[in-house]
Amino acid sequence: MERYARYLAPAVQQVLESRKMAFVGGPRQVGKTTMALALLGPDATETHPAYMNWDNPQAAAKLRRAELPPGEQRLIFDEVHKYGRWRNLVKGIYDVEKSQRQIVVTGSARLDYYRKGGDSLANRYRYFRLHPFSLREMNAARRDALDSLLRFGGFPEPLVRQDVVEHRIWQRDRISRVVREDLRDLERVREISLIELLVDLLPARVGSPLSVANLANDLQVDHKTAERWIQILENMYVCFRLSPMGAPRIRAVKKERKLYLWDWSQVDDPGPRFENLVASQLLKYCHFIEDTEGYLMELRFLRDSDRREVDFVVLRKGKPLFAVECKTGEKNVSPSLSYFAERTGIPKFYQVHLGTKHFESGKIILIPFDRFCEELQMP
Image 1 (cartoon, one colour):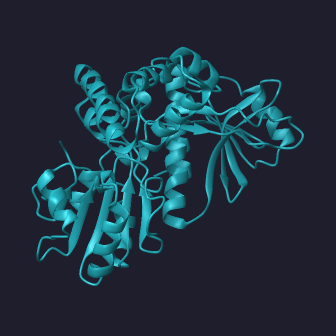
Image 2: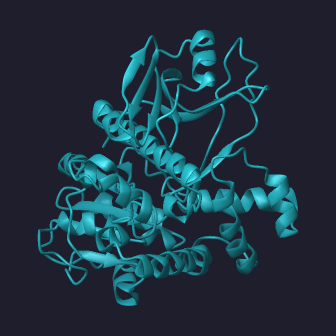
């Protein structure tokens, strides 16, 4: 498969040169290993001695004994978070080797979550979240780029191959490995079949306020268990949830959260699929700024008790920067945008769509999605 230069590579390179470790988390098969190997050299593969994968028993045994390959300045520790004492192991290696080695730790789960407890790794690393491909990253100049993203998702393998049958097989195998392998390694969960059912139920709930009570009823488990399972899937980069933004003068809802998938191609309905793609691109934008510039970024949505809604609001340090409404076709401006534009301090409201129409009226901008990505310089 063709190797692409990923958007996070320069930032990771800079951190390594500052003698800190770089932790890179993200969904399974999003390209973490490929990006890390590229840091070893243009032709580096999984057989490179500096690449040590915990899923490889020989590499795991060497890591436990801190037997590192001689002469290798840069090391890649892949999936090492599956080891119960990985924090102390990595800390010990770093403290001894930091003057001579540069260390990248990658994993298909939230490394910030699975580092809790034990010895602190504070001030020894920077954490980055690698996202699927976005419109600008894959090459927005291609006329079919957005269609390809919508159809095949942003994960490298199906996006590059663009084969419908292979895409279905890839989706099935990826989810199976996440639930049956990663889940087994990281969490104490017995009801694997029920979590597989939960994963099957989530695509139909994308873009709507998520009722955990209804999910619990469908799964025939209690509310607390269903909530815990969803949180596990969030930690393993299967899905993510957005909270509402409370604002004065609009009677905003404050408890309901909306759910989206990291692989938006799992969503069948074109409207929610496009909304999920936009959510993913905006989350990537927020995470990139947070991980590289240090600002506290949030992605939320607006919804009041009369069911008026704007799909997304991007905040920096608690202050809204702009809001985004999604429409698949070229339509008139949503009444909700006008309503919230008058009653909130959000400076800009974008309505993004898949057509070509573009105009501005006060705080409201109707804009094609590809042009929106270019205007914001999204990664």
